[in-house]
Image (cartoon, rainbow, N blue to C red; front, side, top):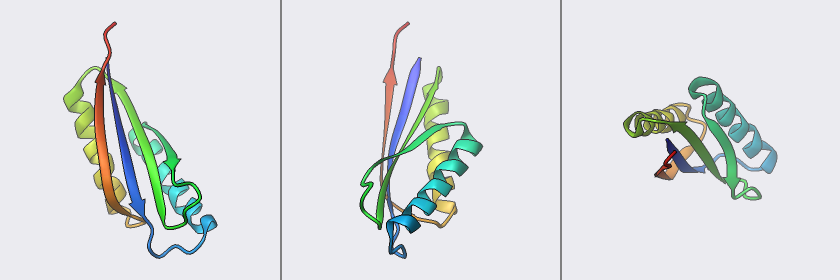
Length: 97
């Protein structure tokens, strides 16, 4: 079994409140969950209104497929033009049965 995880750091330069940030982040999370069937959550910088960190996790048995899916998710987030990706980290973990 392979677990793939990504941390995506987003910048929301046009945002001026926590309420506005939460609206944008919730929209992105819902879209990624629905389209890619991934586990997604805001994981850090909860009290900052122009920065967000989102975690994405996928489980499967093909590391190449999971890596490709995470790359698709990153492109999808960029294409939404709701926030700018300033950094991302991807990690794969191999678990034995």
